[in-house]
Image 1 (tube, helix red, strand yellow):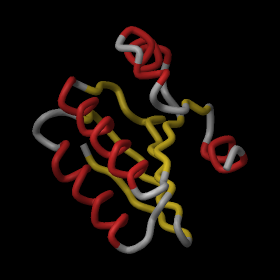
Image 2 (cartoon, rainbow, N blue to C red; image 1 turned 60 degrees about the vertical axis):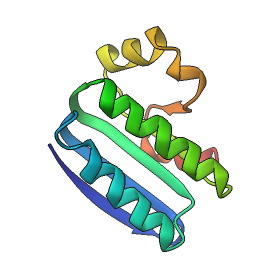
Image 3 (tube, rainbow, N blue to C red; image 1 turned 180 degrees about the vertical axis):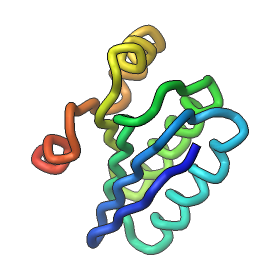
Length: 110
């Protein structure tokens, strides 16, 4: 997995390329935590190029969501494939995370 970060003011967009799994979840999580320390309050995670998320990846998202909400922020997910959307529905995480079709949609609902 690789990911790219794009920051504009207090908004961070993270594009995940590959899989979000136990071997890389900590690097992913730390990058977002570092951005939060610098004032980021809205994190948009783009899964357009992501094929798989394991339970540790889901756990990292839940943890980040809690940390962001504690500081008045928000975590939004975009670009989920049908398979990933089903994963979030089966685990009922779709009730926790706002899911959007695109980055623009996630920003427009701010």
